[in-house]
Length: 283
Length: 266
Ligand SMILES: Nc1ncnc2c1ncn2[C@@H]1O[C@H](COP(=O)(O)OP(=O)(O)OP(=O)(O)O)[C@@H](O)[C@H]1O
Ligand SMILES: [Mg+2]
Image (cartoon, rainbow over all chains, first blue to last red; front, side, top):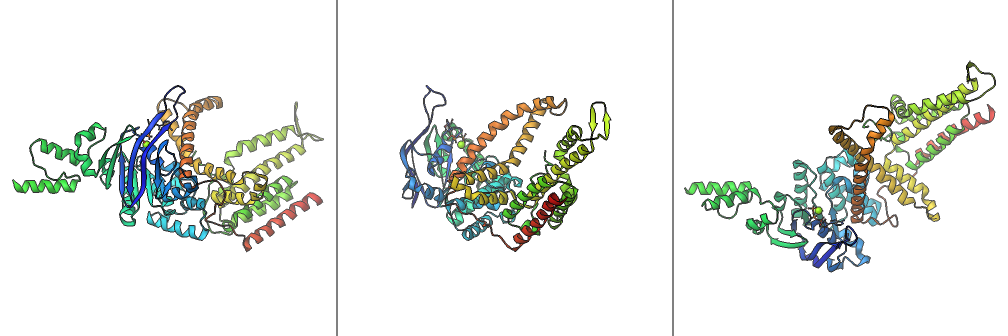
């Protein structure tokens, strides 16, 4: 079932100085996101990823074309808050999206804005915190948490609002490797176990490999789309778009160039190890 | 910079901790008025007993409360000295050329210094035992009637919450920028006060730039979480007055009577 749809959407920022042309950040993008899908958007700096996902929950409104969430159009102001509730968003900087001075109060923030009853807020906050494994920090000040923990609090804040879609703009860019894993494991679990639709913008290829589908943006348009395997199989194109190819794919590419018949494009270290063992047993 | 004691909060379950934050704010208000009403040492005695009782029941160490005075010790000292030298009386105790010290001056200087110290210790006790969130909450609810006069009560309390939330973040950032600039040869530690102030100036630009960026980000994040002002907003924690609030109010009334009596009869 389709849950989010961008129809030939364009967006531009006002010109930085008078006399200069407006910055066309997103150009005629069409995209359909299915319920339960894990979609990943890639692209090098300035390709319009952040702008595009801000169009998906109505933080920005399209210059032309349309964005629909379920049956609602994001330009329909009477449903702005319904859309924000259905489509939650996590930002890059964990510090700049936490509003309150106590973890549980921050998780409650969205629900308070929605006008939910206090007892129901309490229930949902406790549940959301336990989902992201942050219950023991409920009464703490967010400023003492690690980056990964802060992002998990932010995720809890969105989860408590019972969203259908989770938009994330480079949520792990400012985290250390362990924080990155912490956040990505949480997200993957929410997607697989709770059927939450995820749209993730990232620069990390190992995160992109976890997705069901990849979209690569370039100069405001989607230029490449498909499963991670399909996309990364086009090694040369991917490199030309300024992206890294996952190391195992790179390796199998080189092995093939050396005349070794690697089969099935192994992408993870485990897959590669198996394939190499198979090749070795054939010798 | 990290050792700031003002504004820190120690969670707890004591009598003082459990009081409704509105009660605590109102008592604080009464306390401040009392500090300014006190005329003599009897009054300070009453206040000291009141503060001590609050401190003991909150299980805050008295030494810790005294330490909170540290940041204003210079101000206390200056106030003391100024009042000591510039209060005139009838017969001087001491005269060194043009400088005369009168007994009235000594008395007044001590009173003023005590006033500052009592003010700070009282407010510190409040912030030590009440979470900033509860305080802004209480303020919002106490000021609610002003909404009718179109005073932006909710906005004010939201601003305070956000300010409190970002103080540690911005302090950490200042620290980082200072270290980065020190590594490039900036000197924050030597020279007189003006030199030091001048050295701090280059800190302000990056700090402001980043603060504005953060403000932008935060506004988007708040909007993404359905924030649209105070209308129809609910709260997770509702405030309720309980019996202990009545007890605290009665004790405050007692202290007030004591100080009013001092003013009238002594
Ligand atoms: N607030 C703004 N005002 C004007 N132009 C902007 C603004 N934000 C982004 N742009 C421009 O729009 C284009 C797309 O920016 P966007 O932030 O969407 O890219 P991105 O793919 O998210 O990049 P990154 O990987 O660096 O996050 C860029 O050319 C950028 O300079
Ligand atoms: Mg971006």
